[in-house]
Image (cartoon, rainbow, N blue to C red; front, side, top):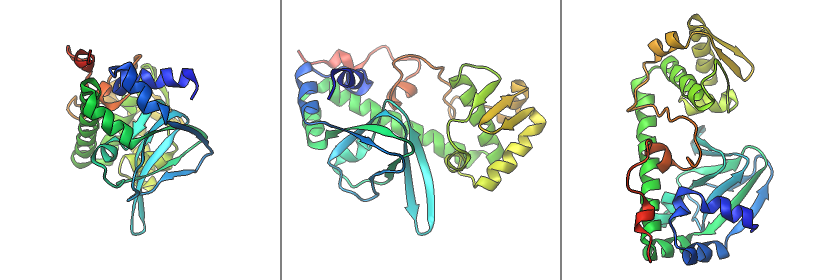
Length: 259
């Protein structure tokens, strides 16, 4: 791989505390591939030989049951995925496909497991990343079970407003089919929810949404820090652990770096 790509991966919180020798060892056999849009990277129940890292483009994580399909997450650079399955040597519980042209790095799973056994800083970082994923899942379950569809959409828009700088106009990062699935809604119910938000001065024009009265929208949404994560955009916030550890903890995995 190019040195600049290795540097980007190295800056991820998951790898930042690793020893130089271990990082060189796990990336020596890594592969980088460029994939067109709509390429399937893995299927549910696959045996996993690699940890995947999204360097460019976007990847949809999704699942099927009978004739139903749902979107579980959409990942953008720089993101890792299927870490839990790699650690447990378990089959994938979800499928992954590119939504647009993407650059994906694949690090051999056995190399990662060996590094966890040998490198305390990396093992700690992996535990933190998996903990961040777990907390994110709990937030999603609470959001889906405790709120109506309109409330979920309202809170989603407020979260995007924070992430996109706080202005009154935001751009939906996903097409509405995917957004509906992420919010556990049908496209028809998402459309009705947008219509219901019109009386709160929410106007939709294509992918652009104008929040004309954010205070009124907040009164409807009633955002809750135990459900919503309104971490403002900042540097070096890649990974679930960083998003869940906001503000950052006093002690980090770099404290466990081996001599």
